[in-house]
Image (tube, rainbow, N blue to C red; front, side, top):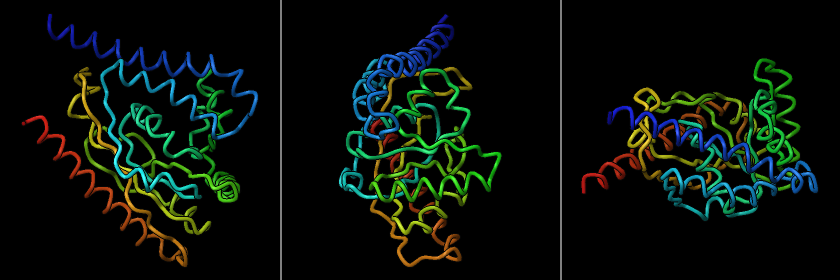
Length: 253
């Protein structure tokens, strides 16, 4: 009986999350259409959608605001665990302001959410076509640089629910070096302390998000990319472990 209740709670929370991600963009479409493909559309959307986190019992705590507040072009590098990452991003969007995201082309066809994402200026790429995707991203990055807009990238390339951080792909780092813009690491603590897809558990919990000092790329060239990736990943892994330890200690106390 208790196990059935946990499973029901898991599905109810995720269904509500999906519902909000559909209904709010639908209601905001007329507003988005007034200024299409404007990344600032994401700010009012985020302020409304943040209620989702409160209702399903997920608390996001942001640290390192100052690293995200500055109006400048940059590549934000973050670990990727779950679709719930969207809620964490929405939570901090009013701090980041001019920010957009690289998204798979498939998302563009995800109903009102996909249309709303396009109208909010997300950058869609087809990951099956590497050459075309690279050209499109370089063109997009030049535009973002001119508009002092940050680009959020998940360099692992997919969601990692194992509680670890996988190796980073090179694409985002090529972009940062080519555009000579800094990299801002943003780290989410683990969701495994309160949710599990395999066990169908979704309790209330807290996620710590920490933005770290920017890593400069000025003067770097393509031959420096491996070292840049290693430096960035090492920083993120270390902070990820620190945040997880802090959450565990909070639960014990």
